[in-house]
Amino acid sequence: MKLITISREFGSGGREFGKRLADILGYDYYDREIITSIAENKGFSADYVENSLENRSSYMLHYGTTFINTQLDVRTELLIEEKRVLDAIAKQGRNAVIVGRNADVILEEYKPFTIFVCADREAKIERCMSREKGALTRREIIANIRRIDKSRARTRALMTGSDWGDAHSYDVTINTTDKDIKELAKAVARFLSDK
Amino acid sequence: MKLITISREFGSGGREFGKRLADILGYDYYDREIITSIAENKGFSADYVENSLENRSSYMLHYGTTFINTQLDVRTELLIEEKRVLDAIAKQGRNAVIVGRNADVILEEYKPFTIFVCADREAKIERCMSREKGALTRREIIANIRRIDKSRARTRALMTGSDWGDAHSYDVTINTTDKDIKELAKAVARFLSDK
Image (tube, rainbow over all chains, first blue to last red; front, side, top):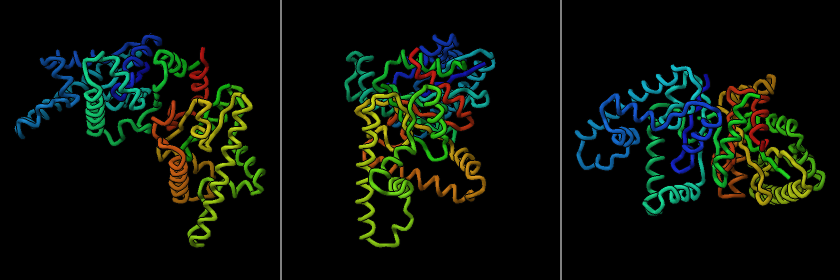
């Protein structure tokens, strides 16, 4: 069995890259499916699970310590469920690409091949702008990139000593700036092909 | 023409990786040759050129300001000559792998494919220990890694706004920890193969 984990900066195209890589390699692909499983198992909505895990709740500050503690409890519970879901995926013994969810850290014992996908700030803003098709302003997108990546870094810091986004924490780091994601996925598939 | 530049942490195996990659691809390979050219053109010894460019001179502190200024003048002169030598290599129009010498920055206009090679601290120490075969102590090797990488980062900072070793500054970053350099070079050759 081969597991490939993709961690990525928000807006870098890491999800598209991971999906294409899985398609080319004929591997299973996991991304939103993990959130959906956690939500079903715990009886929450997928949005609530995603927001809690990514620490996006904007109303936390308004409700004082009790609310924050409850939030932290829920978050810990969700992280434990996340580990259970990821373990179950790995135990199937099938080749898989897993995007996000700190799968590189959580599934360390299965020795996944770990990829980090990054891009220049301007490239990420442009990618988000074209994805949002005007639904968010440039300013909102910049704030999103900052907040989500900060949250990803913080979540990883809770789990491990190694740094999110530091090339030493991954086998390979790929910069998508000025690159075609489709061609990059093909190139990495060749890299991994063992021939 | 394709140019591939390899920047690397001291002890990461980046030089061996670059040499093997050039061999597999059938590209020209440049590394020490650049130092030798600069030395010949300027009438210095190769060791002196290398030490000056890597800012290794340990006696600088003993001679006061005048000596330091002279050193800086020589260093600037050598950097200019380095650019001249690298430009001449690029202008030949032949496929080449160039290790070190900030070729990624200096040859930016030729749009090289830029690779950074890193490794975990312990992996780098072990690689250096086995290379030095007891000629240096573990402590001396650790000091070397720190000093040389610091100097590389500083030299790059003089030339460009982007950070040495930051994955955003390169197309691909490769972590050699627990990896076989020969297999990695083969894999990257496949990555680059365009098929």
